[in-house]
Length: 169
Length: 169
DNA sequence: TATTGTTATACTCTATAACTATA
DNA sequence: TATAGTTATAGAGTATAACAATA
Image (tube, rainbow over all chains, first blue to last red; front, side):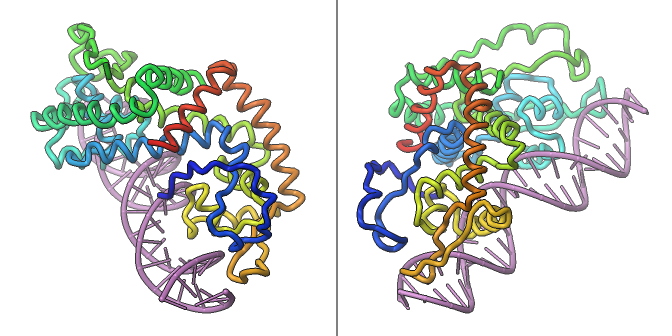
């Protein structure tokens, strides 16, 4: 990805530059873009995912994989369709994702005895251990960094507002 | 303190349901997921983009296209590389995007006289008109809806926090 | 030699239709 | 017939290498 441009703008458009290449190090004006929710939301999301990946790099977990493990742990006895749809993942796309987690022995599909079409999802012992380590890394590195930037109170307020948008918008 | 690590897993797991298909309408527990910034951030971003697309559907503009038009308007005389990199778009991927906008007569590439390698980007008259209409739709529909959900003050606070994350995380 | 715009390409995400096995 | 999991596939979005024109 690209850079972090925190450059102060200041109305230096009136300087002498007429064209590109005139002054190579002059930053652009974001203008109304910096007030567009969608824009800052997307940029923030990319940064947060990037940071998450770095924090749990030792466990090789993506945000999506982490969310699957968390949800399976929290909801024992549920099948693929239920887990996937709760996460907004389409069932066809969930297959490869589970294949990956299962091949790494982090979770397992168990044919349901009630309905032999269903695969009940469970965490393996290794999956539970990895998830525990992941939670620790997320708390001590990822969330800690966020608290440095925003403060714990603001962090809670931010999550509350984003949840409201996700649920009511 | 950092995080509420003690997600009460509510003893209703001990209810009567044993397996999938037992009680089809029972919602899953998000648990710690609802406190994961990355998770709510991503869900919120999808909802906001979705709403944006609906609000400006009559103009057939995506959030990314809107951001290009806005940035070109705000920064006359800049070339493709400068506009693209400011938006976090890689130059190769910016080509098709510009082809699209140019084919719809919303913006134009102009060969720079200073450096004949560069293409200066400008909005066409139609591009300016469409952008004006888009801004109006965004303000009266998109932002208005957000203010309904959060309130104007919270909306400003949210954007400030997201900007801080995007720039400092 | 370095840079701008471009092409080609590949990999991830996401989305839809259709198959199979069960119900 | 309807549903769960799966396959195949297509489309976006994103990433890198390399080329032609120009500096």
